[in-house]
Structures are given as structure tokens and as C-alpha cells.
Image 1 (cartoon, rainbow, N blue to C red):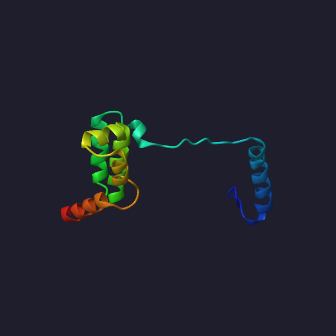
Image 2 (spheres, one colour; image 1 turned 60 degrees about the vertical axis):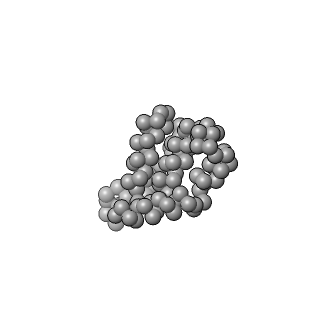
Image 3 (cartoon, helix red, strand yellow; image 1 turned 120 degrees about the vertical axis):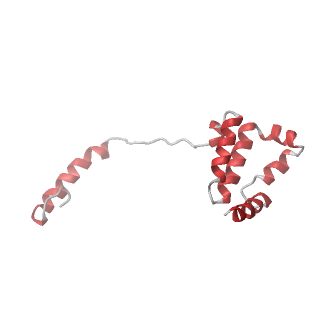
Length: 114
């Protein structure tokens, strides 16, 4: 049944499936995953703007906040804080993962746009 047979061939099919899988036990099959960080790919202002604009189309306000955070990290949090006249810690707090006024503001605006 495993390989398209019927009940009468089930034992043979299982035996064949086990034999087919046996080489997989002997080989080390390892997939290596690397962490993904969108900020690594946000290399210029145009790309950052497109990324944040795309996030605005998502009804989930966390997508927008994440995009703003990624864009800020891509530009450099310290420089962005300086340009905005904020302390770096304040910028980190404002863009942090906890719900905050940015999420609330976005949610309010989004609800009005629909």
C-alpha cells in the first residue's frame, strides 16, 4: 500500500520502504540554517522605503513596526537617534517589541483608512 500496492502486498511494500530508507540512516543529512535579518538586505534609502511601504499594506501593525525597526537598524540606530534628536536608548524603547505608542498610532490610522 505504501508504494501503490494493495493489502496483499503491504508487508512487501513496508519491507521495501524500510530498505529504501536505510541508506538515509547511514548518511548524515544535515541542513544548516542561518538566521535571517532583513536589515542586512536594506542597503539604501530606496530599499528601506519600499520595505516599509510594503509593510504598510499588511493589516497587522506588527509588520509595520518590524519594518521600521529593521530600517532603523539598517541605517544605524545611533546615527538615526542623533538625526532625530533622541537618545539611542529612547529610540530602542520606541521601536522595541512590546506594544507601544507607534503600534497604537498605526492601528488607529489603519482602522480609519479602511
